[in-house]
Length: 210
Ligand SMILES: O=C(O)CCC(=O)C(=O)O
Ligand SMILES: [Fe+2]
Image 1 (cartoon, helix red, strand yellow):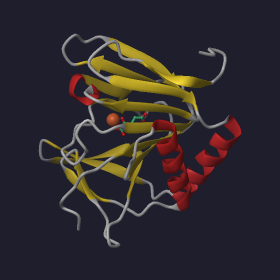
Image 2 (cartoon, helix red, strand yellow; image 1 turned 60 degrees about the vertical axis):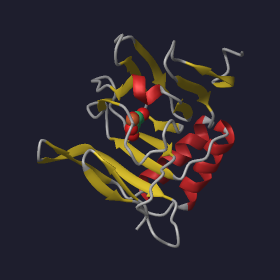
Image 3 (cartoon, rainbow, N blue to C red; image 1 turned 180 degrees about the vertical axis):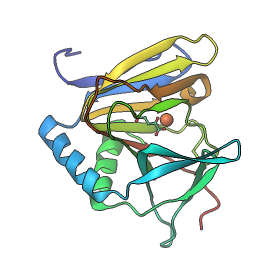
């Protein structure tokens, strides 16, 4: 393995047991990653995320946009944080990135949740992506643009933590039994003052296509 190359020749599994988190390094060169960052910032339909927690509607500062394949021109619906969200069709820029990620990882995706963190004060709390609409043990591919942020995994029983920095243009894939055994989060930090965009490509199996 060439440790000096930002892009790894072979992805490495970061988890010691109970799952697979493959880190590919920077699969998109810096200049191109900067181009994508600006394009996605402008192009995606960013909205505050909503969650229903103990019957209360909460809005996040972090923004999200949600895209998916359509079937007969109809959008997917996807439920997480107790709220049902309707997807938009993939714009070309995002389709190009979905293709790239599919080629890199050898997996197929039909949906993408985009996250925009304006600065280090915004993050995402410990969770696992085990919603019932997701394909069971399906791969989730995470592509990062903009500010470098720390990303962490914590085992649900042993509490062991594994963390790594996610740089602009880097690709990370969670698969297998990872979501069952590990939580992940994007910790908030006072050290980062610039925005980051993260795309998570997912495979949805949803027989409630509308
Ligand atoms: O921003 C990230 O890197 C992670 C996002 C995430 O975990 C999610 O969208 O479920
Ligand atoms: Fe997640």
